[in-house]
Image (cartoon, rainbow, N blue to C red):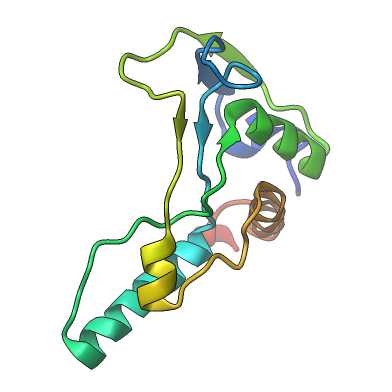
Length: 140
């Protein structure tokens, strides 16, 4: 059974958006969202490099493109055709308005780049997984 609301899907009362007065187009923070499969691919590549060459490094992993919190909510609503319950909360001290990765080192040294480079593809694959695993892995 597929939950009818995001709230039912997550078992929570919705999410809190921390601030809407940042110097961004919609006032919410912007972040670089990266697909978990892309993260795991980068980690495997880094381990392969370590095994093959003995070299290791530190890498920023991301798409290099920030999306706002409102972008995420809007994309989830569009992809799932369900309303995302959310409430506005005060800003958290120290939260930067915009934060995103410069992944050129990972691209150059590991040959890595995201297979899911946009928010739409990230949400679509997450939603497809959730629909086929409504109770998580334990009830798949």
